[in-house]
Structure formats: structure tokens, C-alpha cells
Image (cartoon, rainbow, N blue to C red; front, side):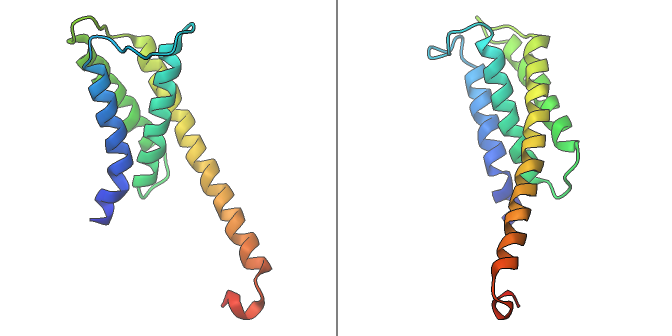
Length: 128
């Protein structure tokens, strides 16, 4: 059960992505050049962050899984009327995945430093 709970954020992001890519158009998409690439980057960065969280090993497997999901999502989107598939969208997915992985590693490093500092500031009897 605990493993499933760890996967819920990633499953939620994948479900939202799948739903949105099933729509012929997205009404509230940001309007600036290459906004869709930015959305792909952020979405897949978040996805990879949470996949990395769910995995026990902190290696590039999370990037590969996120990137493969990007391919699957692009193929799915190619069958939706009014939508198309793009290698550039997948490249944004993969770049976002790498960024999400690095953000997770940075977050873990910062949390570890905070934990060590807390332990150093505790009186000796409380630290045990």
C-alpha cells in the first residue's frame, strides 16, 4: 500500500496529461511563443520528480520512464482530431524530465543538509 501511495503524484500527473492530450484543443493555454514546449517541460519535470520519489533507486531510470511516457503520449495525441504529434514536444518532455530528476536530487541534498544542521544544533541528550 505504501508503494502505491508513493506513486500517486506521478499517476495523477500522467492522468491529467493523458486527459489534456485527449482534448481537440486546450482553451486556457498560455499565449506566448513556444508556450506548449514550456508546458511540456514543466509537466514532465514534475512527472519525473515524482517518479524519482517513487523509485527506491535514485538513478536515470526515472528520466527514461518519463521520456518513454512522453513518446506514448505523443503517439496517443496523434490519433486525437485537431491534435498532432511532435518530436519537439517529446524533446521538451525529455528535457523537463532531466530537469525534474535534477531538482529531486537537489531537494534531497538540501533536506539532508537541513537534517544534519538540526541534529548538530540539538543538545546531545535530545539527539540520541
